[in-house]
Length: 351
Image (cartoon, rainbow, N blue to C red; front, side, top):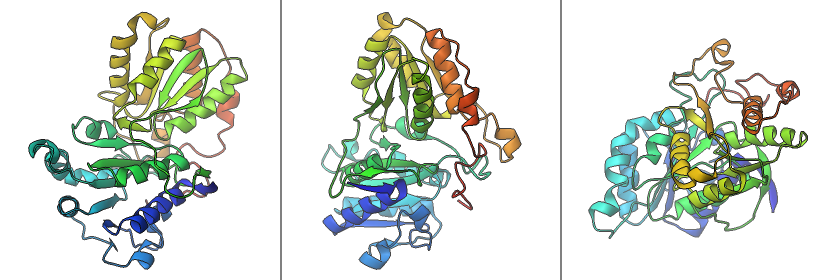
């Protein structure tokens, strides 16, 4: 085990995958930049050369097609977008080619393509550089969609994604890159579709994803001092979803709150509520709820986004309402020492 940042864990996984398999290539805008995509690709080109680690012209649809073609010839392509928003120009390749290939050709060949996309808010990114569109990708049969929230999971899930025989969308929230944690050394892989219980409790089930897991931990640990016990399930992937983990927890607690980094309407959280209500209707002791972003784009001005995002105090307030308790969350709100748009002093632009 070693303590490292989320970004370093990504770098460690890429380094290991490229060492294990000469067919792994890593490319995209900025992979050879001095900052190395938040530090995740630093040193790779120096070690493996420009044939395997390289920048690309600004043509997202074309570079995705290159990855699909490489995968069909037996390589394992890892493509990186510095923002999820940039990947929208490649939706035709992802949806109509990568995702459909195995189905259209009788299961004979899949597309082993991993597409890394950075998402999330901060530094005034605004409406076209901060979108959380995981529900778009999760809607497409044939795509797997992974959203790690810890350094350990980032490494283990990225390795599984790279060596998966089919396309994987790997979503990294930019507020997580400097998060530190213990990471298993060597070839450590986490199965895609296996959720993780982060906290154990009996009063309510909290289902979260990506950065929302961090906000949930703050809220849950605060409420534990108020004798409110929460079961926290970190999805880790939103396609496939570990339904059994969710259903099992809800059968135990009788309550469900789902946290989503995306906009409310058409979200992953809505799908989780719908399926859990279908499967666990007789179990609920209160109406299930969800917290997500409002149904309008994120503004650039901090004054306009002050109350846009779900934070720990909102989660705590909702939990208290659902379990019938009144708890003052002022202290929890005051623990936030940085502006809502910036997680720490280390966080800076332009991406």
